[in-house]
Image (cartoon, rainbow, N blue to C red; front, top):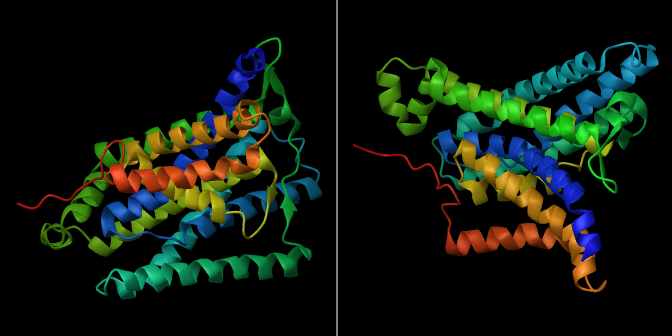
Length: 321
């Protein structure tokens, strides 16, 4: 019991950091579903594209000898901006090429297209990195400032980069929520989500608002990719698969189409996974280890779909007059 209590603060911080990571990725699923009511399963590769752009920027700065000269905060902002830009533009291109022509098709058709785009992007990233660096398993360069550890208790210290992930994710989630609910652009996006035909009659460019939704969701995924790389270092073209599935679980858990729900679902899932990874072995005498933590994520998805398919905060349902 003493061990359980001693490691609790560190497990809590790790779970919150992981949860906000899932929440940022889940925003891409949530925003697209809220407007078009279909799941963009290519979003996990858009997330990975942001991570690869981030590592390329850092490796380039390292090769130029500038990595240690730039202020850590400026460096973080630069890498985040690069990852968000790339992922946002990529999401925009995917919407234009793979989804817009299928908008009037049965819902299963764009879903299949999304899966195809997902495999296509995986191979494009692998091919590009193989040509450029002759490797597609890349490691984020160490940034000493973010590798510092903050002492929480006599037995527990937390990497500064975990706190950076939490703060950055909260700022972006709050900013996105304000954009959607407190600006004219957000009002237009919500109008398109409510009724595309009526929104068009009111003078709203429906295609532009849908494209903007993909752009914003992709940018959030790119930011999550960069933060993931900084937090966990190693990335591959296939890195996005498991986090993407878990982020989808978080979106369903919180309420698909609900932005605050994505944040709540991500944090809850991250905490459950962190506690399972840290405590499962201790509580079962070693019978079950950390490798069983993924079972929790998918068990939660099944339970939510069975007992509360609208999620913890409720699915955003379109009203019709």
